[in-house]
Length: 268
Image (cartoon, rainbow, N blue to C red; front, top):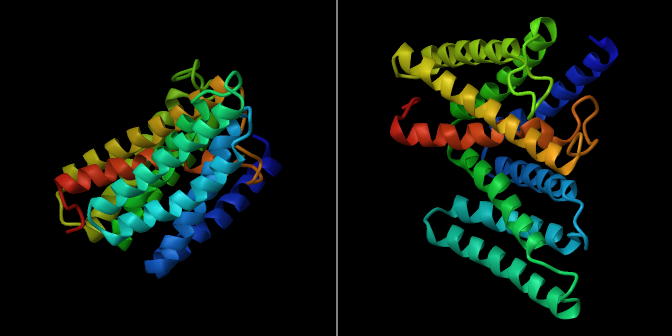
């Protein structure tokens, strides 16, 4: 193991963890502002990975605006405002395609508009559930992704030999995957017994579901990067790559927990 790189990874991870912890402690508009900033930065990395021609500068700016509008619409409550925000994003991207096509019909297709919409669905739509979780739930989903990633990394580094899905992510091993699963289940059982009202078996199933979601979210971004021939989403975070590289597993953990929460109020 490369210890200097490992120390850099730990320091960056701890510093990065302080930001969501501040958001959880303050909640309200502080949470909204930090969540919007995270989403905007992750989206810019997402769009940059595609290296589109022509560049997506106006779409990136539009994504920042529609991220705030979309999160604000969900915070306001009801179904009408989020639908209107998505319709606005659709027609913004469609009009951008229309005017670009009119200027250079042989050079423009609808690909950039689809990438723009995919970024809004992939990041702020998945993350908006944060605004509806209570503090124990916020800690739970963050820890589920963090514990899974951390345990999988260290167990896989120490013991990993047999690869789990080499065509998608050549470095991830069965040992790391099972280590992440055990750690995630242990965390959910501990939190459940401390703050929740469900039986132990429900926390075991929850930990299993969140762990699978975290790993599949990670695999998805890995496959996306390999398709686009990109190593990291950016170099924003020393030892970690980009912001999107750090939240890829969380992007599936959050909606998975929201779905399970709708079926059973775990912390009720």
